[in-house]
Length: 229
Ligand code: CDP
Image 1 (cartoon, rainbow, N blue to C red):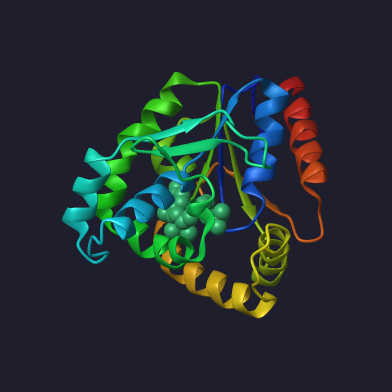
Image 2 (image 1 turned 90 degrees about the horizontal axis):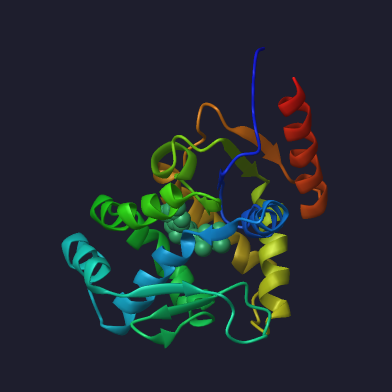
C-alpha cells in the first residue's frame, strides 16, 4: 500500500454512543493543539429546546425551523464542575441538562429527521473548514468532513458501552441501572443506525477492554509509522 499522511488538520471520529469518542477526541485535540467539537451537542441542544418549547418531535419542519432560529454556543468551560465545555442555548447554560434523561430519550428521534440533519449541516461543515479540529459524531467522516485527513471509527460491544455509560451517569449522581442503560443504548443504536456511517477510508478501532489512553497511543503510533512510509 502506498500511503502518505502528514499531521492532519482535521480528524473525524465516528461511532455509536459511549464508544469512547469524547475521551479520545479530547486527547487527540490536546495532543495536536486542535479544538474538540462534539456534534452530538447540537442534536442534544435542539432536542432540549424543542422539549422546552413543546415542539412536536415528529414535526420535522418545525424542528428544522427551530434549529435555524436557535442560537447555540459551545464555549470553553465556564465552571470547574467536570464539564468539557459550556453549552448555551439562546444564552442559557444547558451543559448538564443536555445529559438528562428526557433529552437522552428523545434525541435520536430528533436526529433521525433528514430536515434536521440538513439544518445543522452547514454549521458543522463551517467548523470543519476552519480546520485544526477533531470532530466527533456519527456521519462526520462520510458526510460532514469527507476530506478529513484522518478518519477513525470507534466501536465497542453494546454491553461494554452500557457499562461505561452507566458508570459515567452513576458517577454524576444519576440513579440508573446497567440494564436500563443497556436497553436505552440498544434502542438508540437502532434509530441512529441509518445515519451512522463507516467511511470507506476510516480506521476502525474496537475499544472493548481498552483504555482511552491505549487507543490514543495506538493512533499516534499508527500516524507516526504512516508519516514515515
Ligand atoms: O454521547 P453519546 O454518544 O451518547 O451521544 P451523542 O454523541 O451526544 O449524540 C446524541 C445523539 O445525537 C445520538 O444518539 C444521535 O441520535 C445524534 N447524533 C447524530 O445523529 N449525528 C451526530 N453527528 C451526532 C449525534
